[in-house]
Amino acid sequence: MTRHPPYRKEDGVTVIDVALSDPRLLFSELDPSPIREKDLDDTTEDYIVGALREVGTGQPIKLVFHVPAAQLDGLDVAGVRESLKNYFSYRAWGEGESLRAMLRTAWVSLAIGLAFLIGCLAVRQFLIVAEDTAAAVLKEGLLISGWVAMWRPIELLLYDWWPIWRRRRLYTRLSKAPVEFRGSPLSMPSPFISR
Image (tube, rainbow, N blue to C red; front, side):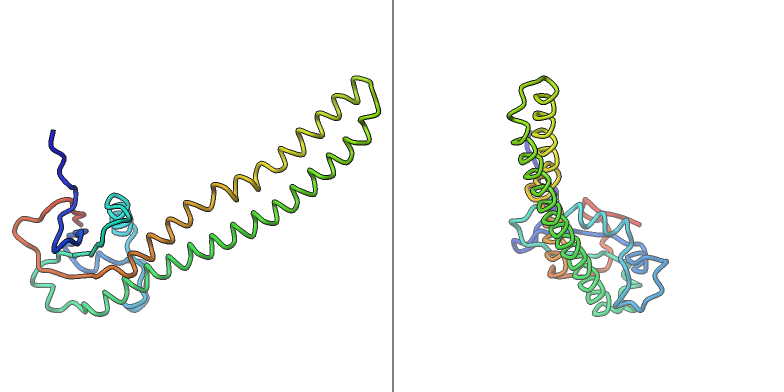
């Protein structure tokens, strides 16, 4: 079975094609901002982000929007390009802020967890002299409780920051991607989002 690449290439650059029946569908209908500040439509954003994830990190990309040729003449291409750059830059900044907030929480959680663990271990040391069953259960309970308190800070610092960092990198990459607008061809290459 021959596997075909899911996205076409032009001059070694992977193309993410987006077909729009109307260029206004690119942006959220709810956003009253001027074109250079508009939010991207959720469906369009999901498609572009999903396509970039499929393409992977090692290849240069460009976004090519196919619109009806009659609507291409009246389209503020420079404004739309700037809007896309601003939107993806803003999303990258937002992910960066989320990452910083998550790491602050992780470090505070780590400090609290360590203090609790040290407290549990200190109390446990006082109970070592006792030889009865209740003391043994309490000693083990303190040890387990202390390490359980460390679970969340360790999870945050080892694992939870990666997805946010990846999203920030993805949005940064999209903010720098070249953007083209073309009149709709008679037969569009796939895959496309068509609205």
